[in-house]
Image 1 (tube, helix red, strand yellow):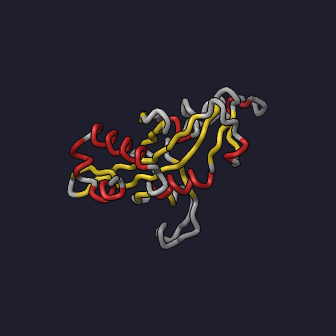
Image 2 (spheres, helix red, strand yellow; image 1 turned 90 degrees about the vertical axis):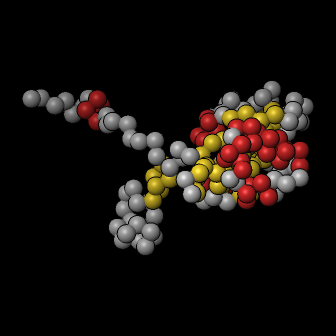
Length: 181
């Protein structure tokens, strides 16, 4: 058998799973080995929801998990809100939502909101990447962080989640308390 070492097809590997792996030095959390695959984040129970603040509408776009939502496509994000042209700008809340189970019943365990703006005409937008990462982390850890949202957007979020599943909503007392208007 002849192997062509200059052929890149020999080097291709099968695709890995959709889980995102984080390496950790925390040997207590990894049974001592701390190696590859030791800390694993599973995004299977996370949903990304947008609220258009000005139009008061909510919609799910799973592309936001990888910054590839319809809202984010073909937009260069800059870290300064004032540098985004306001003529034609839209304001959004990107909400990370995690569903877990307690007593064999699903509930909204983690919900965290991030502010962003998009001006498709100017191909510019504002979002704070550290805020997005930190809020996603909070939602993954089962925390509710919606205190920065305006009251009308909190109502849109509550109505959307109630409409999605009344049973899940009723089992989510922490979220209900945070979204009281």
